[in-house]
Length: 188
Image (cartoon, rainbow, N blue to C red; front, top):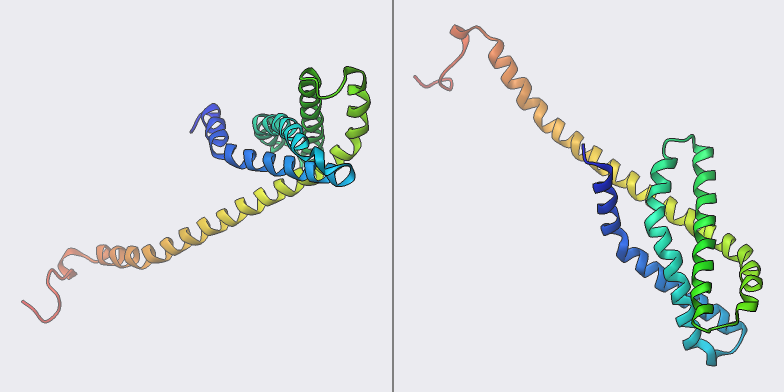
């Protein structure tokens, strides 16, 4: 059996590119939405701000997401989804808070408005983030099921190829030695 830490490390190595791509996509989308409601002259700065926040959120999901998934697999379906959704909401808002704190430390906005901005963003961020999390989780489950069904089909194909060969040799072995032919019929 493969040790859990090795499997976890391999999963992190497999998923870092996807996590990075999703983080950049979320940052660009957030910057576009914010600038559509404010001024487009702030677009480059918004992309930078959103990249920092998305990197914080994405990194937390990349590190803790697999752990929540593994732990929740032991639970019943309802408890599993509750734990995953609550875990996703906590990770998401913690990442946003870390990102906003980094931006405040860098002077992007004053410390006096950090908590007000954060609390005003909790509800929309949580709703959008949980919908995205559930969508990604369902997509991963569909991928796993498709991979499982493909593997089952390959296994069935191999079994069907092996069975006639196995039956022929079993039947041939079950005959007494004097009844077995050592040459094909018609040749001496």
